[in-house]
Image 1: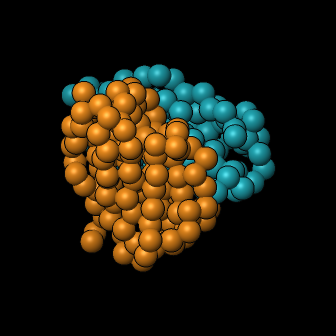
Image 2: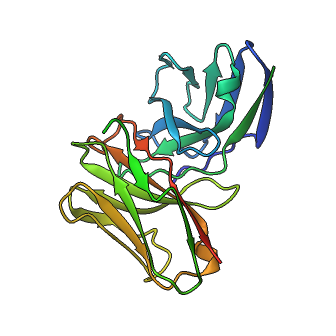
Length: 111
Length: 115
């Protein structure tokens, strides 16, 4: 399994962009990079995923380094509802599709 | 239903008691997963079903843990002779296919406290 390194915690001011980094230097060529987030007292929620190219959706953008050893989740305008733990999860194809979450980054949004 | 439903939402069990946790996945979702989340930690994989077949149970911590999905829809996670270290949130997730590129939908979990 690809090991990941994420900051334990980050802070952002409301309505400012947030860049959440993740290092996954042991990722293999066929692993997708998933991002999930977990709001307090809820189950994890899908945010975005990608393979090689940068990806955008209504929630966030995912920037993947050219060597794929790191990625950055970008929230364009943080809101108080974005306060959550964010997990970066490289997903090998041959593991039965279970996710290995790690401890993630706890994002605090300051009003 | 619109999402993954788990019941009960909270469960307090006396040490040594058996418990059963229920997961109702999204209708039509083939894949179903159980995770265990200790306080302050990320979820950890327990087991995986594709329809009624349990394809991976490598994450179950002991033979006291048992999961089933007999008709390929509702799943039950059973813990026998509960111990204090079993206290955690148990999360269920389902997916249409389980293949790469499909996001999983998680329930809100069952918080089990063993006293």
